[in-house]
Length: 423
Image (cartoon, rainbow, N blue to C red):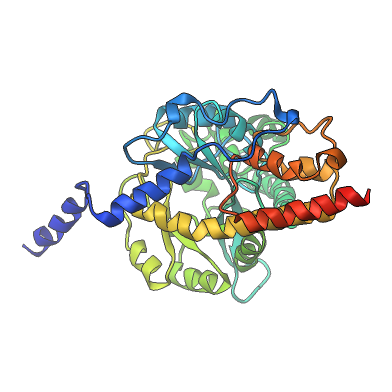
């Protein structure tokens, strides 16, 4: 009898609600996900750019579907960023976070593809880390931290990219160690076979090794490869050069991002890890999964005051054991809480990026600044003659001002005017 009584509230939660709070949350999320064109007119340098959004995404009714965890073939996914975006569009996704492992290389292609479908891209990354409270060499537990950035990307990109590069370099050594262990287990995999699966320039990960094992006939599927050999406690598991998880969380915060703990249900001691990461500045954690289960992690998020998030963790490998992109439908109130925390942080990051550029304007810095923008061709764009038009160009490229106030934008423009008059 008790279990039946507890099941009734969960069923009622699935019914659509029309409360004032939810209506306001829906308006807030929809206005961000499907914004009106920016106030600034594009400069002559972007005359050939596509329109801001196609006609089919004019604001209308209905919920807004976010996908906050996905992978492309720039890490261990099977689809290109363009194909991933197209699949997300077919599944009704309006906001897509591309969160490849330890790289943001696929973001520019995703942004370009998304402009054709009216999808908004959240530049993201899933960072491999290690929880090791005693900082003992060779000890600790693998942890993955998701980072979500505004349309302009990280405010101190060099620091973030340096960490990601070090992790990717370590993945090559880790992959070789795993192959060596597999060889001793009489499961030989050739390095050339592994790198061919991973693709040019992609640091091989465990999923690539698992795919090689399937193709070589040693296991029936990827899941069996992990269960028998490659899992965290498996005989062929190896560590790379992952940074400490607390340092990762702090770096995400220092570069204008929102941090969230990925798939905490895979951890051996989630409570201790979440407590430690919260102390380092963690913003949220994955709670919702495609099967709808929260497995007690909703209570942990509440205990430590963290955003409750979730995503499909889509890789595109196919099969019944993988959730399709867009299958985790977050409540509109959840999305509203996420954006209300993220937007001030992203706005501050955008201001920092523009002010740093105003202090040292150059075509190279402009290209770096617009790395994740719709408009990336700055050839023939004169910084001296354009002056304050640089700000308008950036806002047009980013398709957003991320809530920067007029007075803040004017501060940047004045700095650029000062630069132009002194040249």
